[in-house]
Length: 189
Image (cartoon, one colour):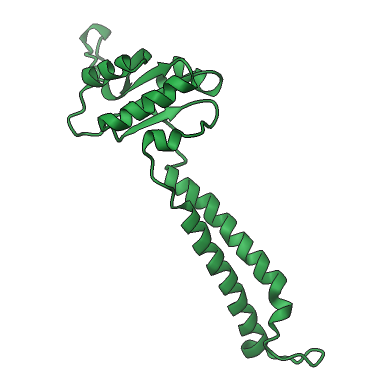
């Protein structure tokens, strides 16, 4: 049996994954986001307890493709409902009811509407989850004690390491120069 004094413990070095900075208020966060965009940073995010009007343009974010996803899902739902009802009424099991034609599309409106809404809702939910990378159970910002304020009264910018010569000292200096307080390095074990 090995004694405790003979055991060697190897520490794994923590890998730097980003930098987090806190800002005083909404105005300073918006200004800082615009300066981050102008400096050429792409892999950064702004965190606040509420939505901020103009933040997307300040960050240089592109328009979301979610509207296209929802629209395509709605078209698939509506056309699928019409095709399904036509097939069942006119081809698969044609029965003349009350003297109506086999393809009496006026009766199909409620089902068509419901399937259009159902598939567009699924497209919205699953498209949003896929585009935002959720569910994400862990992020390096969660290791920061100060980041808990992001859901109450804190305004933060996190810059993630992107592999293209990410320099922690340079990012830290830049965040401090644009008004960032309590700048800290985010690490991952």
